[in-house]
Amino acid sequence: MFYFLKLSPMMLVLLFPFLANAEAKVEPKKVEAKKVEVKVESKVEAKTEAKVEESTEAEEEPEEVKPCEGKTLKSKFTVNANGTVTDKKMKLMWMQCSIGQSGSDCSGAGETFTYAYSLQQAININQTGFADFKDWRVPTLKELTSMVDLTCGQPVLNTTAFPNVPKGWFWTSSPHNSNVYYAWMVYYEHAKHHTDVKYGTNYVRLVRDNVK
Image (cartoon, rainbow, N blue to C red; front, side, top):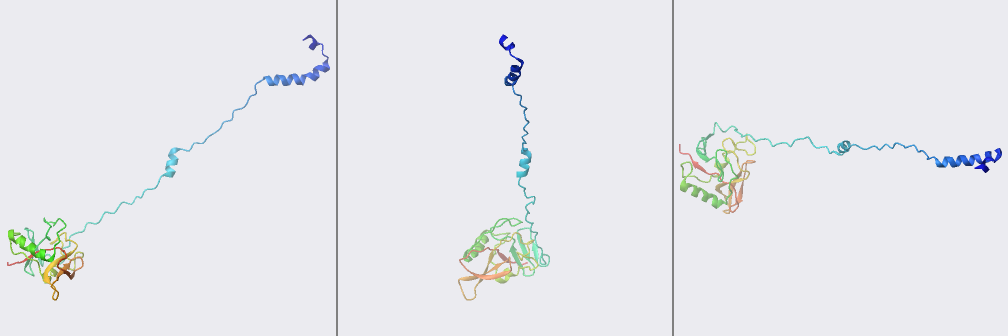
């Protein structure tokens, strides 16, 4: 200490920078904290961008098919309360439903039979009767085609009198003219008639002669 005081002014000038550096090392260095901004993407926005657009078009419901009255109901057919329909022009009485169907709306899919078994169905029904009649039979080709009403489409049949007509061929009792293995049938979807082998299966609607 005393030796330091005896130093000359020149020596003090030389030593001053070293003393200043020593004091600067002792003081802690202040570092400014930098604010770091982190942008967090909103989850709601992310979901919105990733959202798949759903179709707003509602599924179209099939249009309800309305019964076709055609031009034959008042002039030709009379719907009876016992499950039968009277053909005033042909003087016939039809079962309103094909065999296998039932009710005023002819619910059910209907049954199909071979030619021989369709004839047997008439025999079976006549044992107990239907609508108080026991003389039902499979119609001829002429009788079955007489039901066609071209003012109605698919089926070409008065569906007010004959509802829920099965989409398929109907047997007639008329055999083929030259081939005993074939018989005639009628298709009401397009008013067609054709022959089929008798062991084929088709729908049946019975008829009887209306004596009234």
